[in-house]
Length: 292
Image (cartoon, rainbow, N blue to C red; front, side, top):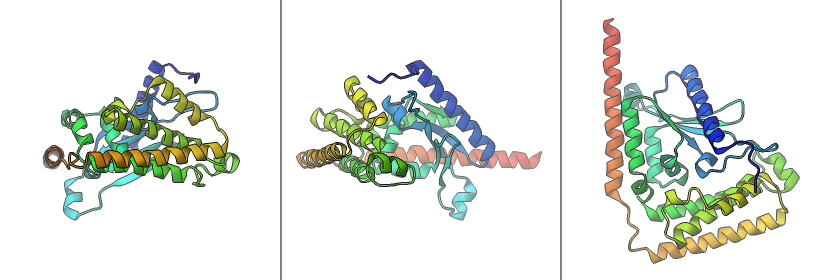
């Protein structure tokens, strides 16, 4: 059992306070960005925030922005950038059109955002947009189940490759221990999520937070190091097992897993309507400003 130095209420308060600081920083340093909403990403959404004497989780956020009329007319590249804060946490800014495409690609890291309870939003139109997407989150998760499970398998393989790869942010750890504990933590977490979805037919939202015993096991691997050979062997086992389970699951449901074009169209319309209204509002403000 991990001895977390913060209570659940303290963790919630910490997350919201940190998100508000990031929101203020973004508004002060990048006022040109038309922010729609900010959502916490990663461990917060899995109930995996850890605060011990030797390990403190940080708060990474995804910020979704609306393009301006000028950007659309000029055909500018859609904005996608990441700002690294002093505590090494990340603020990733992304055009809502990119965000929409990632949802359609069934990227689990973005589907997860629609299930998060940690978000900031200002303005009635923005609140309505996020609410509409959240209300449709279960449908969006199932737009393309073949792509969803292939994406899940791809995430595991990506983490497996990264397990011993000396990326700059984990080079020292790998030189000392032979592997990156955070990568193995994710391999194991995705593996157990996969088992519950494939074997118990649970929806994605219900496996984001795993059983308490499993969660404690995952937290242990997240903050402690173990024998490198044993970790690599276990990683290979879980990735191979997941590959077999997912392939069988897709084969078994080949006639049922069709792309849901109706849901895609609904999401397209919701986002298109928001962008249109938002740009209209921008134009009205400019006209009024010019008349002052």
